[in-house]
Amino acid sequence: MIVALLMLLSRADWVLSSLYHGDQSPGGICLAVVALFGVVLLALVPLALLLPAWLAEAALRVLTVAAAVYVFQPAIRALPLFPVELGAVHKIGLALGTLLLAWLAAAKLSSAHWRRMQAALVVGGLLFVTFPMLAVRAMDPVYVRVPTGTSAQGATVVLLLDELNAEAGEQIAAAITQAGGAPRTHRIRTVGASTITVIPEMFGGPHVPQARVCTPTAVCDRTGTFDFSRLRFDPSDGVHIVGFHHPYCAASGQASCARFAPPSRPPVSSLLCSFGRLLPGRKASDCDWFAADDWKAFRERVRDAAMQSPFWQSGGGTLYAHLPFPHPPGHLPSAGLAADYADNLQLAGQIAAQMWRQGHERFGAGFRLIVISDHPLRPTVWCKHAKYRETGCDVQPTAYEGQVPYIVSSGDDSDKTVPADNAHLFESTSSRGSR
Image 1: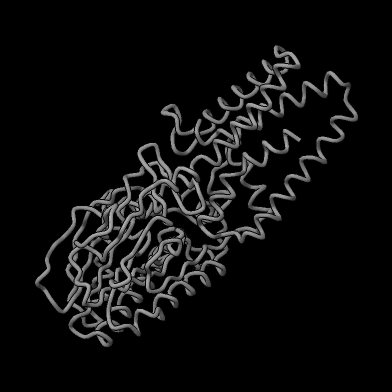
Image 2: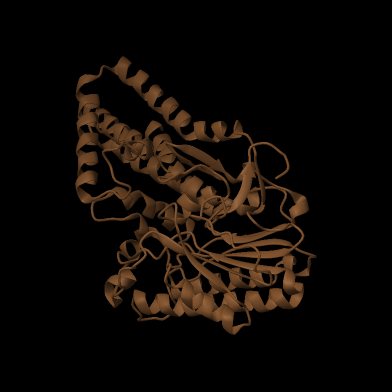
């Protein structure tokens, strides 16, 4: 029973991540967890019945210690000794360390000490998993206002194109120009290397370069925590949100909100796959689901939600649209990363142009379109995926490492403010008040 409980606690990160990203339903998560608990218990029965008592006891101690190390592996991986992505050497080192601890527990602890250690491991595991959830409830709310430099009386679309290279911004700007806009294009610094490290800071949160999901609505880092459920928008700003990957709708005060989840494996398959991430030669991305048709349908749902948001029927305000363009993968069956990215970039340009036309027709000269990105294309991430290992990862290194585009098109050229980076796109404060 102790081993099964620790195995469940070890998958808390999978449960929390699935809830945070929305890629599994609560019902599917419960089904997977119950199935795991049952499988572990059934696997332990023959261990207890078929082995001699002393050997069964030693085996249970080894399994208990191994499961406990798995519970605390997020904290272990946060140590300076380990990189963000564990290599084979680090994984083998963790395995050898686990075996050493397991041998000590099996050979050196008396029965009384072992029972106390079991209790300590379970209590420690429960505290480790639940403490972040309790801690974020004590955080002050973050009150968010419309993007810096935006008039609350106007109409603004903040179009966040995920994984848009700085130089690719020229193609987006060209599409807006063809639609009748007069975009101004700049290159600014990105504050993080991934979506999960950038978006919190964009909404006024702390710098979280090693962010990981720690509650269904929050990410944690040694430097701080950001919880979407603590975000408070001012209803008078008329903020509408369409997005994916983050629990945007956990915030309050939005005029409307639509959140989508990327395609994923079935829940039981996803949970089982998560166990293998610590094995040498395996990567976290091995559990991602990149069926071309599923991703194409997902992208279309998010795009359509943005183009049909209640914002377009409102008298003004702000639409924040975080769209999975030109984010890989593509839907071209045998294309390499460069071809997929180019195709997705063309689709992103079409969306930006449509946004400009629709906004200008609806709101006139008071309309403003801001195009920004969270981070550039990451070849080091995508080249590891099975599709691009087979079809080719022929992407040229960017000349603007660590930069993203910042494009503004509006009928009013008076505001020429350009941020230095993509942090704090929204104004925020820890107390309610005026700007």
